[in-house]
Length: 218
Image (cartoon, rainbow, N blue to C red):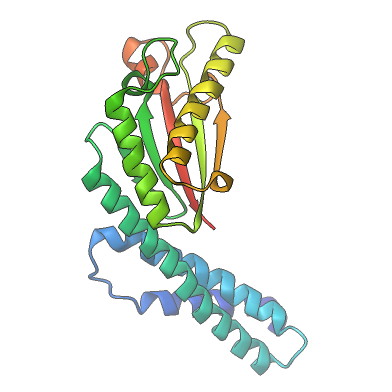
């Protein structure tokens, strides 16, 4: 019975740790608090497992220590994402999307801004945007970057797959030329298979033609 109730005690302890954070903190720190919560829960669970061979008191102590350490690590990651996202929003054009879900950052660039039709040559303005992203990535080096190309459904699936791969490679190449370690960057072509809008309209197809730079903390 004690063991069956123990995970609830872990969760409660972790939630109390996070609840101690300032409830009046500004909105931009939401992901910091979310990261702390996730880290606290994970750390508490890990601590409980590590202390599983001891007494109930030992397991409780291990869970609380794990929760505290996890909250610190998770909160640090969330705070770093918050800072990087805000810096990117200030530096990039308004038509470049920057979103932070607390786990990673996603920078979205329209392929219509990046490339001419059916081309993989990146224009001068977009080169500048990508260099801004590259500088940010070098300033925050502890992350992995996936560059994912997406297309609309005009043309064959094989054509769009190839185009999305080559465009992702072009964007990844600019990031590397801007000083980002090649080992951190991977390019992926998603073709027409991950639309975010309807391909039945011109507006929807334009939204689907995009390159996403997904920044994930290590």
